Every structure is written in structure tokens, then in C-alpha cells.
Amino acid sequence: AVAGIWPESPSFSDDGYAPRPPRWKGTCQSGKSFSPKSCNNKIIGARWYADVVNESQLVGEYLSPRDLNGHGTHVASIAAGNIAHNISFHGLASGVARGGAPRARIAVYKACWSLEAPPADATCSEAAVMKAIDDAIHDGVDVLSLSIVNLLGHLPAFHAVAKGIPVVYAAGNFGPYAQMVGNVAPWLFTVAASTVDRLFPTTITLGNGQTLVVCFCLLSSFHCK
Image (cartoon, rainbow, N blue to C red; front, side):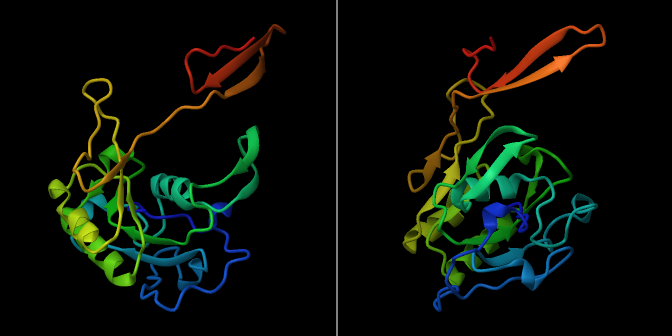
């Protein structure tokens, strides 16, 4: 996760995990609202890189591996979030949440910073990303997963692949045309987002007693009835 992590999330519980493997060389770097105890046997490493970022971009940020805007937590849970029960969005869509590899361990390298901005507007220092990837290789990661746009032609990622570490990038969804993706270097796994056929209905009662059912759905062809 290049934008940090929120370690208290149930997606990062280490219940039932064995101690971290002896070959792991990483560390849990502390900082604002993040102590060495923020790591566990699920989050086995955390580092942050702010020394090459303009100070104006760090005002209000957590100078630590802690996530400010939720992006790093979101993508980390998608990739490797543990199985979490009774999860909902403000009471909607209650169920079980899990990542693609729920028993995998996570190491966080926070190289991107933003002030509650969308990930596309985050400040990702190329030098910081290169240092983070080098540290990840040294620490002993098995897979690298990054949700960032093209940096230096993906040369840092090529360095990891040459060391035998698969690198997974987000495809990006910034256009300018439909079905266009970024991060298409041949040594990357590029993963696009998807949609699911789920509805999130909410009943709203107006002051005159009229009742409306409002739906949010992830496929435009579905409608509330």
C-alpha cells in the first residue's frame, strides 16, 4: 500500500496467524499515531518516505505509515484483507469482506501523500517510490501491489521483476477515452476494476408522509422496484 494503512481495521486482524517468517527482514517504522505495536502478524512491516516530499504537501498528514484518505487501506484490503464478518456500509450490504489472498501478510510502504484528495491527486515522489520498492525487495516481499500511475516508465518495477518478484499495478481509469488503461509495461500484471450486480436500497420518508425508495447500484441496468 503506497498511501498507508489503518491497522485497526478488522481486515488486518492477525487472529490465527503464526509468527512472521524468520526470513523477513522488514521493520515497523513508527510515527504520528502509529507505533511498533500497530504492526502484528498480519501487518508485518511498515515504512514511510516523507523526506523527499514538499513540506506543503504534508500539512495535516500523518507523518507515519497511517493512512489519511483511505486509499491505501482500501487497496490493501482488496489484495490481502483477512476474512471479516458482519461488515456493512452504514448498515447496507451486510456480509463478509475478504481480500483476494486473505491469509497473506502485508507490508506497507507509504510513498504517496495527499490531503483528503482522490488518489489521482496524491503526491507520489518518484524517488520515494523507487526507495520503497528497493526496501521491499530487501525486506523479502513475495509480491508487490501498487495503485499508482506510471512513474519513470515503471523502471523500479522492472527491477523487482528482475529479482523474481511479480508486480501488480492498477489499470487506472482516467481515460480520456473508454476502455483506456495505464500501466501497460509488459513486465507488469495490470488489473482493472470490475462491477457487481448489487443494489443498496434505502427508504426515505418525506415530511408529507410520502415514502421513496432510493437505490445505489453498481450496474446501471439495475433499478429499484
